[in-house]
Image (cartoon, rainbow, N blue to C red; front, top):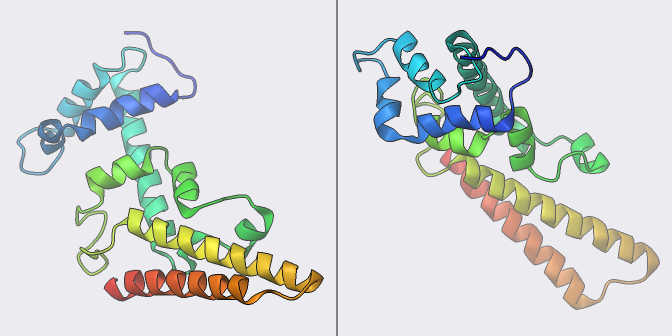
Length: 185
């Protein structure tokens, strides 16, 4: 087994995610399975020959930590996108920001998203996944961009009634989508 001490490649990290996506293998990681962490980390490490068991164990722990941090970002008020993000165009969507904070966030959310050690029952909403939250945030951003475009048009000339109605409709859709997600939380 070759021990690589450099940065992890995307494909190496994906090997951990692929292993966890198998429901039978995932059960091995849960309490009460009868297996120790050392045992199943060894099984994951066998799929990544360029890494030692210790490196895989550290990367697994770091992946869990980055997932938790991304969850906090997704669950914070303001939907995780700040005014600076919108103004500077640093992040086009919450989903993009989550993936930047935690590689493979969407896939890990499908694996860990309903587990109480990641989302305590008081915080977990069975009707609102992180993906739904991200979609609602994307809708809001699109509506805000439409309003901003309409304001820019208004500065140059009057907005015709159709354009104004479209902007109002998009704003209502965004608000209703966000309201339904917020009420489910």
